[in-house]
Length: 253
Length: 226
Image (cartoon, rainbow over all chains, first blue to last red; front, side, top):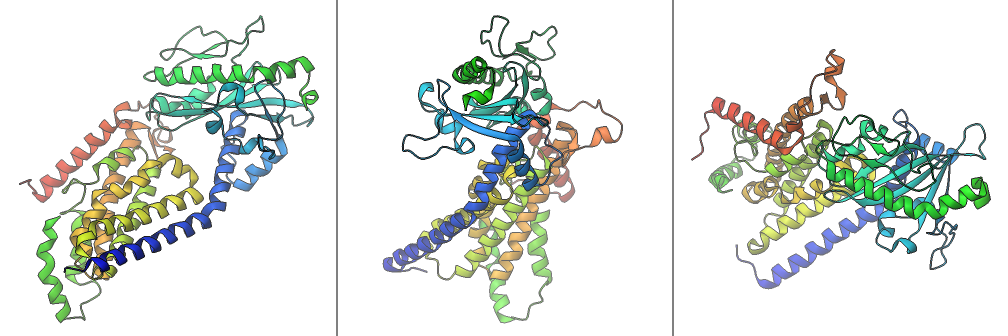
């Protein structure tokens, strides 16, 4: 059936308005639920870096545990605590996007630090969790690195990725690979930062405290992980040095 | 896409006898055909891209199936309801707009209530828009048929797509990861050292499973490409 041009144009306009309206409604209506999911996801990863959270199924339970165990702060490159952003708004560590900050020069970024507090003595820090961000083979990778109160021994890691190959590079999110980082050290005996390196190949014998067994078939993803860790640990040096100098984390606040 | 044009006379017939049974033989065929003889993946070979990408594990595949079925059914229904209003010259873009809207809605709902799957499926939910099955059904069926028939057609094609990718995912997860719905099958039956096959995790595994499926099916139905 041949319709007039006016009809076609009117039809298109009405359709666009109706569909556009529908989508805006859905977007606004679902925003709170989506924000909660993102928050839950972040907190899951932070806790996942230091403890096994697979047994916690209830989202609210996880959020409660997070509130109870984790204290957060934001520092700058020099390790000074930041409480306001450039516009004077208060900064919340959980809301700082590592991905957005990654675009800035290292000196201009905001660095959130999450402190996992001790069970018995809640004023003592059991682990420091540093978020990080970098490039894998195909797209971005990100991670949370937890180091013990000595700021040297790795307590655990939690990696995430966007596009690494399933079964190869994507294995950085598997427990098997992440467990390999536990107990490794980021400083050498002379107190110099060396970070940890994923080596090439899998099943390597005689690994040092700074080497992690690699993933066969995913050497480039492993390289991305190594670079990300060195980059961000260097950036967190300011904070780490300050904490070490003060002898305890409480003094930094 | 043109095969359904042959069904046009049937539509006229339907107008003459409005009291057609809710599940008449013809309607049952609309649902049943795409499940086997006219399957969108194995016979028409549409929607292969997503069938490769998301069938590594069962759970995302199931979510994807539900997403595709709901998008096909609702877009078929909406287009069928509007079929006499849509100007022929812009019909493709209208179909596209409807599909895109529905897909965006699905994606937003997933993000709000099923975030883990949203992360896994990522772009592939959005890519349902480009899944030829959806638009193929709109253009070939919903534009010329009544709403109820279109819903049936959508269900048929949707489930025709769903069961194939679920079968593919079943074998890929079983042999690639040694599990079904993340349940470690081989450990459960006392074979903890059963080797998993890396090929199955790659898209190559999907091609192989899909190829075998097509072979088995075509040798049964006797379908031959012309």
